[in-house]
Image 1 (cartoon, helix red, strand yellow):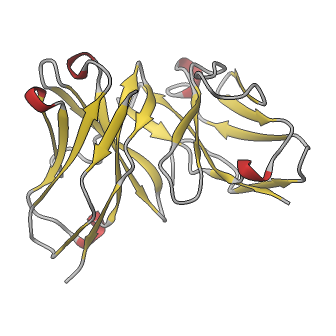
Image 2 (tube, rainbow over the protein chains, first blue to last red):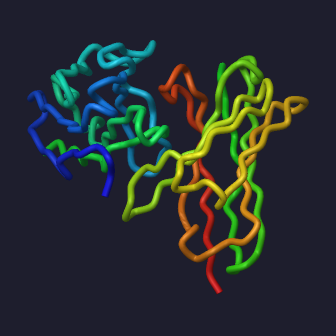
Length: 110
Length: 117
């Protein structure tokens, strides 16, 4: 099991909005920045959101991130079929002294 | 352009040794931490450890401490992940990734390691 908890899957129709949640504890999400990664089929993960809510250059503003307490959320609006991917949250765990990831959420755009 | 290019897929037998590489370009290799991440179908992404090429300072996840060795060669801007004795359970995809703070902002394409008798 992963240190961070994500729902295994989520689905929505094109054009709709979806949120993906990530739950942790005070030793990780509660006291560290959260990042989100998108992994398209057959490719390496790509940084989507860093420091809870910032987007790297080139990432559209359809993607957003937020954090509250020991949970974080990734939001995607205006869903496109090209958004079908696995999405992972990640952060640092101060107790384990290691980076940690969620188990990933598979997004299906119906 | 920042690039991380990993060595090719490997097929090894249990007990054999292996060293895979991650050649970087497009940024100052010695001033950014670079790490390794394991991906398996059953366990998802796992952070293995990181190295600061400037002084070879290395930190390992407790789960991987003693199981692998991370190293770097500043002269060729390349990081390495090595095993002295492979096990079947080491079968996985391995990614190198450049750190920006504690985020992983650029990733290699991955190296598939298969360990089977």
